[in-house]
Amino acid sequence: MGRLQGKVAIITGASRGQGETEARMFAREGAAVALCDVLDEAGAAVAGEICAEGGEARYFHLDVSDPANWAEVVAAVVAWQGRLTTLVNNAGILNRTGIMATSLDAWNRVVGVNLTGALLGIQAVAPAMRDSGGGAVVNIASVAAYVGHNDPAYSATKAGLLGLTRCAAMEFVDWGIRVNAVCPGIIVTGLNAGGAHLEPWRRATPLGRYGTIDEAARAVLFLASDEASFITGEDLAVDGGFKAGGAARRISVETGMALPHG
Image 1: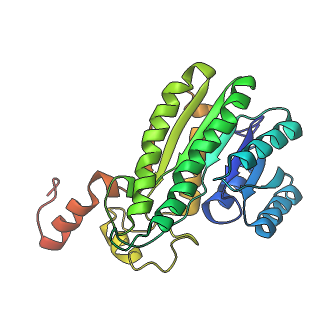
Image 2: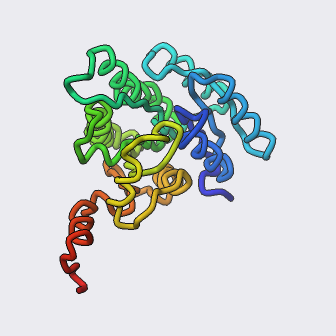
């Protein structure tokens, strides 16, 4: 029996990157997976590969900023499987400009996908999860929620996801729905590949390397599984120690200051 046997999961942004990895991992652990994205050809191909490998998956077109589209997808998934237990709000986009260079259109676009999309997803799935006996929502935030860098729209949405996570965890606890967040650190995906910040961030990460997509996805899998049945309203950093004190450790190493163990 897999760790997600009997679960029915919607994963947004599932056509590539971390979402694709999550979808494949969830299917291997026994979940029926609804891969949702706007990249239809890529998403359908991933779903087909999962099925060819013995998993259960379907692709659904989903614009996460469109509440009507969310309603359609949730209804289709429930018609397909008869229930819905799991949501991974993974869809996200970057902007990569500072505050003064961020246009209102760019701000609204990032907020619409990263934060409003997660809100709409939770609103859409919560009644179906309640009717299924409960479930789990995992929001994909970022260590950008904790620090400031040159993408205020992205950072603000990821910090906002932590607040949304805690509010949703409290609101839906009586429906048997747990809500948590995963905050990946420096993990190279198609979304951030080529960024000038990657190597400096790696050097500031105490474990001294990039994380892998699999490492982030395993944290998502854990929070979606019954192994995390007593965890709700939390954010789990998968960041190689960056949030815990990466900058301070880098200063200590580069200046020759003694670390606590000498």
